Length: 275
Image (cartoon, rainbow, N blue to C red; front, side):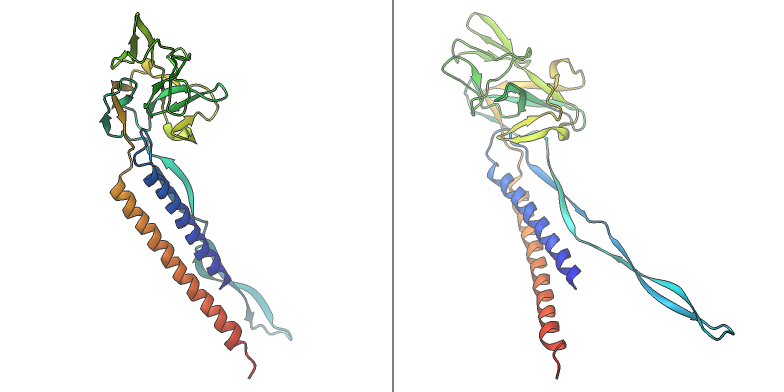
């Protein structure tokens, strides 16, 4: 009976965490470059139940002989858990803003699980990556993200401009006053699912090393679009449906938990009563 409490509780916790993940997706539906998380639910290892007993054997002796006997009852589930939340790096729609500092990455052809990212300087000098091209030029002329991180060129150095009047072609070459200024740093990950999600639309490699230069990867084809931003790839309608499904599953587990509680109350107050 108590094992049932643990099984139901694990189902409620899994659905609660899934609901929190879907809520975060919904909250970032309008965040540029945001990649929705997808959950993976798994069951705990099942337990094999057997009944242990003694089977008597009739033999012509004064004492009988009992041999151990196991009878297989069957397997028992021990619950479920949400194993992990994995970002889905599919392309989001492009939205035209008309701002020269806004840029979007357009995947023309990518290997399976591969993706490209803008390179930015992290707070401790490490290289981080983002799909959010909502950039701006700060007071010192550096091209920065909305959160203030400096955008890097293909040599790993910050990009400093004389003004916000510049152009970027589809190959990432940034031209300002006085000619070519820099080429945007674009990193390529062959398996984007291995990146560490830092929050605020930022990612980092597991070992902290920089990603490969995307311009040198022949099987990764992409273009840059100035005056556009990549919208979130969250499907609002599907996310709402998934949230309702998770809520109903949580509610169903809750009802089972209440049934277990009533059974235990009956066993304690009525079955065990001495008349």
